[in-house]
Image (cartoon, rainbow, N blue to C red):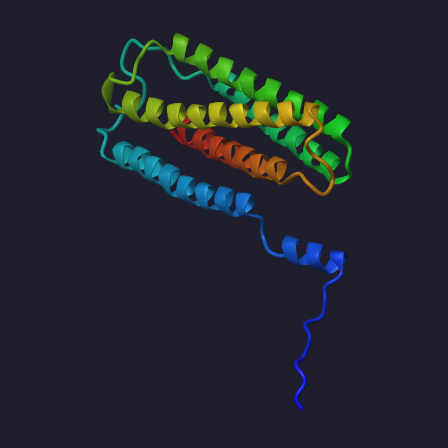
Length: 204
């Protein structure tokens, strides 16, 4: 007489561990999205450097009669965005400890800094005196900075959603994958801006 092995019944703790094994789908999706964005911005940077390399000597920059790029304002915007990345990380550390109050505070500060960056960029655009159709430099300048600004806006929307969900008590120390995903995106936006700032304002 043969006996069949009866599968062992997993304890609830083991079942929970199995469900949590591996990377959450949201994080995988965000990492894949960022990978595609790295290639996208890589193409924009390549376009900028290619256009600069083929420009006639002494002609690269804002068109004649336009204002020079405001390095001081660009530095201020860089400080704002880097600071927002720091506040975002403080929010991550807070929710990992289960402190939703601190997450709410740091997320709100991050959002305020992100909006301040966008307003500063719009002000900068209003003072430049040239547009996207004014020469090759104008085209690549507005394309590179504009697409980055669009990504900051998208990040601000994500932060707004995170803040609203935090106020509804939807996050905890064990359940905050969405916060981690938005944080990764926000850090990516920050790193891209450092590249944009260095390329346009320091290396030109």
